[in-house]
Amino acid sequence: MTLNYRKGLSELVIEHKSVRELVTEADKAVEEFLVAQISKRYPDHGILGEEQGQRVGNEYRWLIDPIDGTTSFVHGQPFYGVSIGVEKSGQMVLGAVNFPVMGELFEAEKDGGSQCNGKAIRVSARKKLSESVLATSFGCVGTTEKDDNVEFFRGLNTCIKSVRFLGSAALHCCYVANGQMDGYWQGDVKPWDVAAGMLIISEAGGKCSNFSGDAYDFSGDFLATNSRIHDELIRLLNAVRERINNRN
Image (cartoon, rainbow, N blue to C red):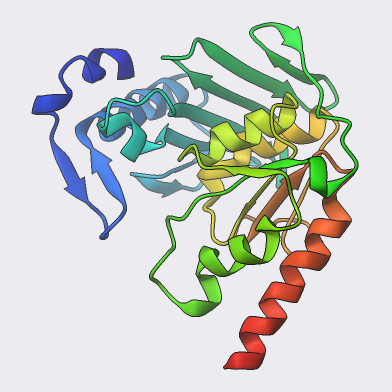
């Protein structure tokens, strides 16, 4: 569906949720299609979608981001994906993210490992931050100083090899899972942004948490790594946050 909409980007209906956050008719159409298909097969399951909100159901809940990376999509870039995660009683059990332009489908099942296009994937083996490539996004720049990712970027940039900005939380997660990146931090992510990616990372041998090192509970800041650099990144992120708090 997204590829068909991509052919007519110049005529795409685009709305602004906020100054930096977009939603298009493609986002809405993809989510409507997915919700309809899920509802037909699993009418008792709950659903949480970025555009339609939450429908309460039984112990199963589907978390849907119809187009993660809408800005990239609107600008004709390939860095966007359709992300679907399934949780049972609060625990992620299935995850899939499809990047149609790049031809990459990432999948994971609880205790079943992670795959990309049917081939098993693993996180990187890098142990040194100075050799690590991280990912982040600057979608929250200009909100509040506490959440301004520029501060965290400044605090980490001199300690790592490089930073990548691909504009899709799901893509960042999947590239941590397959070892192309060693970590990903973000000051404020939504459940549908990383639900599938979290499972794909953990099943590939990685680790996810908030900046304090506690389990990510689908709100606030988010950190994902190959697990080997996780503790050191937590220390650096909290050092930055402490400096910010001391200024206020």
